[in-house]
Length: 466
Image (cartoon, rainbow, N blue to C red; front, side, top):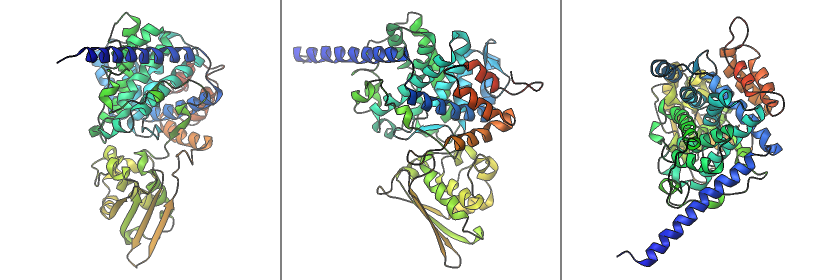
């Protein structure tokens, strides 16, 4: 029987939920109206530069080609110039393409606490909307930063239970960040942002079963396109549910509990974006310590064909997320820790070529993956690993990595980040392109428009970028 007490409880939940969403939107827009804190601006520029590299590097990937082909068949010509290729698309398809390309090689940024890759969907919103909204470079940097930070704060509020349920958190949280990035660019007011968040809450997507396929990066692209749609609806008078982030909203469907303090924390100097990291290898980040160890060990191997077994002591997330034994292609190889270890030992490196289709199916790599065993232990830190290589003559080679490259304890330096982005951009844009774009990103909050970055990130025609 439904009692008065039950009615009072429902009323209390509704009030609390409305207050939560309103407080979130009010605090966010108030902070977004002011310049970014200095440390946050620096972190945002590094994240933006990194994902510009991954988006340009995968601009001609099979997934990108498929999206452009579909756009040309299904949509009218737009005005959004996309990165790494000469196409001009409408905002929906530009966002879909950019977000997908940014995450395609699994080489983009990673927030280690949540395993969210926030940069791809936030960048995609800027590419799609910067021209039509007429915003300055500084406003675009602000939109990018808030778009990333919202994903990370929501992710913190529902982690780790949300990810453990099988959701791909980059897709589910990405749509909220993309909505906020679009809202900042479009100048939405609080009630409009509230409505946009309500629309976004019905457009979340992503499951971990998609890992190792084109669908995984598509989650980031679709999050961006959905976020723009949600912001457009919010600005056009859409009225959604009253409490999309509240006690009866979507976050309670995502996880057993919602940490309100993570969601509603002050927008001061300490941002999660400052803890965003950048990958040195194009694969799942939990395998990076083992790859580091394999590359270390490779320099002490005179004959890799003499390897009889490889034992990898690692965190339990490694076999859980990177447990594919024999990947069929390069995309699947990005979720095979055994593959990363094999190419690290055989090639002494683990770049895009080592995660290509040809290397994923090479006989020497297939052989070594079969000889590799993952030995998980909860006593091993997520950024640590030890490998033991046993050779035919009875010798062993041991390598231990206490902190992987790209981790919070051992972040990529500015020069390492530039080298990474240069390797991604040079085949598409030519020599010196990464250094030029790095300079443009560095001055985006003073003298550079985002349109200048887009122009520099498009392939040269007649000797000049467009």
